[in-house]
Length: 416
Image 1 (cartoon, rainbow, N blue to C red):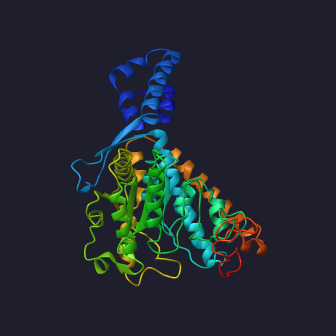
Image 2 (cartoon, rainbow, N blue to C red):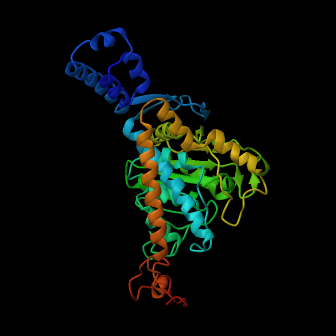
């Protein structure tokens, strides 16, 4: 029988299942005949080694859903190496976005947020996978479903929620609202469906023109995938071999219309035609990360643009005015939550592999909830935007007296 000292140490072991097998082995039983001090030394050393191995190491995970390729001879990695710190970091980022969007939805229902508000809940693995595969000085531009992206580009939860509530502490000083948020090397937040795609192409052109080793991640939804400006952008990007990763976040519905009803071909990763494409499970943060790393290497090597299709799902309606259940069933939504949720699935993988402990995950849950709750409370009481400031930053801070084509910042006259 194990001594009380052995049992006490066993109960504190982080790798309990493996440790239990070792503690019941014959040589450990023999160690129980030693002095208490000797037993403690042996077991503490053993369990310390197990703790280091299981909680500070890295694990290799299989990419669960195979990629689909278009005009490519090689594939992104089919396995992903993940460290302990990366696992906790990705989990925190996804959980923060989920909590942030829940808070935004509640603030909207309380009428602290007015106007448009498009939530990202369910799509967190797309953003977190991409952001952790590119460099900090790479550019990102996306659609109006931008709250999570804004946070990932360095804006605090308060900076996001204050912007949504029209407060001066917001990342656009309360003037942009839900669709026009910005951060470091983050070009928005754009209100026009598909309007960001030529802008992202232009950013990539500037990077190549200036000789920078950077790229632009240009995101759009399946609802924008039929826009003519997207195909014009594809043409120029390939013609000039621009360093741009086009990412279609295919969440299954463009407003209330399913992809099968809106597109003659819903294989969006092939619709760049002469541009290579990759299909990836957008609910798997590691799959998205590996696909984006592959795409980034493609761009940086001078081979031009590449297209990613991240198949994902949004739990909310298109916007807050859409209940999201008139064109799909509640059962469909719940089935995705149960079987494919990106946060739950990732948590189960990192816990079952013993890369992280339940205590570490729980601590993040508590910290994130506290942070978002505090940000939501502060966003309600932050200072309102000064009305006189609403005339500034409409285009830019134009110097006094400057005229463009005969017009100043406020009036339009005939050319001089």
